[in-house]
Length: 116
Image (cartoon, rainbow, N blue to C red; front, side, top):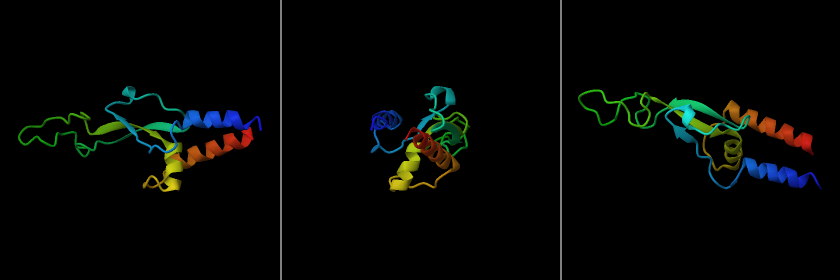
C-alpha cells in the first residue's frame, strides 16, 4: 500500500490534467520550446500550417514574402507521446499512433511494473 501514493504523485507530475487534450506546443525554432521530458515527449519538425510548408506568406501576390509564422516552411512541435497515446486509446484524440506513442507506453509500463 505504501507504493501506491508515490506512484500516484509521479503520475500526476507527468499528467497534470488527464482530461485536457494533448495540445502540441509549436514554435519557429526548437530552442523556443521548453525542454522535453524524455522518454515521454519530444520535439519534432513539421510543415507549417499557415504556409503549407512553402515558407511564403499566403497573402503575397507579387513578390515573395516570408511566412510570418515559420520563416521557412518548418515549425518545431513539442509532443507528449504518452499523454497522446492514452488519449488515442480512450478515443479522445483521432490520429494514427506513431512508434513514439508505443515506445512511451512500453517504457511507462516497464517503470510501473518494476515499482509494483
